[in-house]
Structure formats: C-alpha cells, structure tokens
Amino acid sequence: MAGPVTDPRGPGATTPTRRGTEAALLAFAVLITVVAQAIVDLTVTGSLRPEMATFSAWITVLWVVAHLVVRRWASYADPLLLPAVALLVGLGLTVIHRLDLASERAGEVAREDAPVQLVWATLGVTLFVAVLVVVRDHRTLSRFAYTLALLGIALLALPAVLPASISEVNGAKIWIRVAGFSIQPGEFAKICLVVFFAAYLVDKRDVLALASKKVAGLELPRGRDLGPVLLAWILSILVLVFERDLGSSLLLFGIFVVMLYVATERASWLFIGLALFAGGAMIAYQIFAHVQARVDTWLDPSAYYDGAGYQLMQSLFGLGTGGLFGAGLGGGRPDQVPVAKSDFIAAAVGEELGLFGLVAVIVVYLILVERGLRTSLVVRDAFGKLLAAGLAFAIAWQVFVVLGGVTGLLPLTGLTTPFLAYGGSSLVANFVLVALLVRISDAARRPATPHAPSMRLGDAPTEVVTP
Image 1 (spheres, one colour):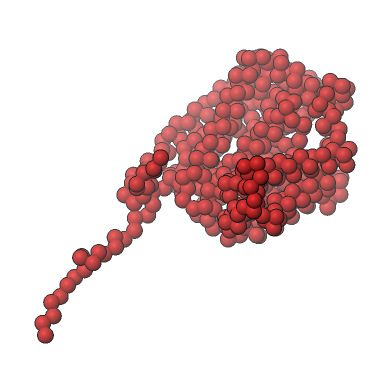
Image 2 (tube, rainbow, N blue to C red; image 1 turned 60 degrees about the horizontal axis):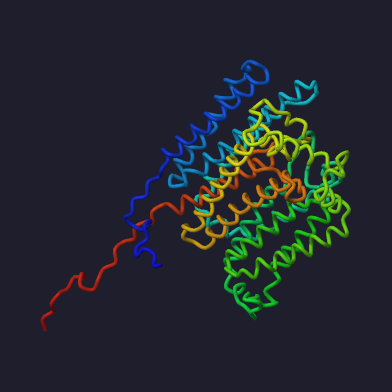
C-alpha cells in the first residue's frame, strides 16, 4: 500500500506537543502511588505513618520537575513514556515499603529500603534531566560510539578483576562495594554498548545485509561477515566465565542479535544467534557448576526445596496464593520469598495484586516498549531508529527474562525488574535509558524545520538589454 505523498511532520505541519496529556497521566500515576501506600499502611498497621505527607510531597515534586524539564527541552516527546515510568516506580516503592513493614512485624533487624529507593529515584530523575539538557540531539552520540564501546567493556570487566570481597554477591562478580556503597556497572555498560551497536550497524549494515547463498529459504550472510556476531558471542561468554553472570551475558547477546536483525532485515541472523546461544548454553552447562545448578533447579525446583530451589518454590506458592485477584496490598505474605525486594518483586506483586494485577503491570511495560518501537519507526535518521529499537528491546528482553525466571519458565538469571525492583544501579541506569528514548521521540515528532523556498526559473528577475 502506498504511503502518504507528503510527510505529516514536514514543513508547515502542526503537531501537538501533548504535554497536557502527559501532565494528566503523571497526576494519575502519583495518585495511584499515594493511594497504594495509604492502603498498605492502613492494612498492615491500621494507621497512616507520619512520613506519608513527606513522601507524597516528595514524589509529586519529583514528577513535576521531570515534566517541566520535558516541557522545556523535549516538548514534542511521546506523552506516554514518562507516565509509564512514574507508575512503575511508584508501584515499586509501594511494594518495597510493604516488604519493609513485613520485616518490622517479624522482628527482623533490617533497614528500611523504601526511603533509600526514593533517594535513588531522585538521583535517577536528576540524571534524566541532565541527559535531556546536555544531549540536545541524539545523533551526536554516534560520534562517541567507539569511546562508549570501550567504556562499556571497561565497566563490564571491572568487577571481574576486583577481589571477590568487594565484587561478588551470591556467586556473581558484578558489583563494586566500597564503604557501604554498592553499584552494578553492568547496568550502565548496557546503555553504552547499545549506543555503540546502533552506530556500528548503521555504518556496516549494507555489508552485513549481503547474502552468500540460500538454504531452506534463508539467505545466509557471507562467512567473512560473521565477525561482529561472533565477537558479541565471545564477549557474552567472557562475561559468563569471569563474572559468572548468566543474566548480563544473555541480555547483551540478545540485544545485539535483535539490533543486527533490525538493521539488516535478514531473519538468518536471528537463527544464527539462536544457534550460537544454544551452543554457548550447552558449553556453559557442561563446564560451569553454577550454571548447571541453576538449570537443574529450574527443571525440578521441588527436588531442591531445602536449598537452591527454595526461592523459586516460594515464588510459585505466592503466585498460586494470589490467584486471579490477589490477597490485596498488605494482605499476603510476600516476605516469605527470599530477596523479594529485588530479584522476586514480581512474585510479591502477583501474590497481593493477583494475576490481573501482574498482567496490568506487564501492560504498562508493553506500553513503554511499544512507544519506544513506535519512535524507532517514525524518527528520520537511521542511527535514531536503531538506537530507539535497541533501547526499547533492552527493556522488553530484561522484563521477559526476569518474569520467566520468577514463574519458572526460564532459569534464574539474577537480573532485576526495571523501575520496579529495589536497586540503585538498575533504577538510575534505566532513567538514563528512558531519557534517551524521550530525546529520540522528541526528534521524531517534532515538525521539520521549514526550508527557504527555492527560486524557480520563471521567478527570477529579468532585464531586457538592448544592443
């Protein structure tokens, strides 16, 4: 079907900024957050805590500032991106607060993590603002693609070379812990590498799209062009070997393969990626004991109920207890799942909000991803298209892998649920990711700058010269 003759975003087109829609949706997200916190307090303690007024004011100011910055520096950005993030962050704060109260009632000596997460959210919004103010044109990032690639690789490798005492948690060497402060550099490496992938694939996509021969209906790439995907595969294996981090390895390789497919439109790259992943998974299972333990636990968690399978079994029990409608905020026992605030926060949501509530959260993620993919379709430049698609898929892939692990569909990977789970590194890094999506969507929806009209030959001034 033929498309429109003229670009609706061309010169003279009037595109509404829809900042009013964004403000209304943000107000709704803040209202849901405050009401949910109040329900948790009333259900668990029977009264509202004194800090409720401070929390309500804080979270309101946070999103008002973010909205005003978008209105000023990215006025044509997609109006659904920021409200979707606000709703996920607000729900995450509510569930973390609910788990804090459960720990207090159980008499456990534990710090309150919800106020800490609110501070991380504030830092995330600060970086969100900084990215929008500093990066006025997303295309400038392509100039620093190789610098960002080196930075990303350095951030990935840093925990591997540090002593286990400051880098290892639960068997994975992905942290840097100093003086009570911890950071997961791989979360920021993900963004750096996505920017590099986008710039590299824009430059090389014509070569990578060439086919050598056709097998079973698939146009296979030339052997010499397999280098990039093999390098990405080797990088993922190295992350798995030296950091024992299955999640980051799976995430990075999956993002690269999908971006390669988007750039070349060759389905053969997906099959090659799946084949390499299957081969890598088999090798990892045979060589690494921790990978074998996770796979065995995934296949039969009940057989390891007293050990490695306890967390997954408790998650499944909680989801089963929640049923369709859930036990209600504050009415369940999500604290029975170990590390429920970070790795298994989706299980806590499923227990207290039920299947309908968990599906509603997934729908919010789908909205966020769909708006990112829509941005990649309408933005004018090839780099922006690949970058938006890569960032949107990074969110989708991470949510799929995490929910797959919580529900027993996939082996556990150690990844956290974006915006929802407790964790400063993940939250702050994902705010940077969304800021880039907002910047690209602003460029996509902003009307084109009118060009000076060209002078036709008949419009040129003429002068009759008499001999």
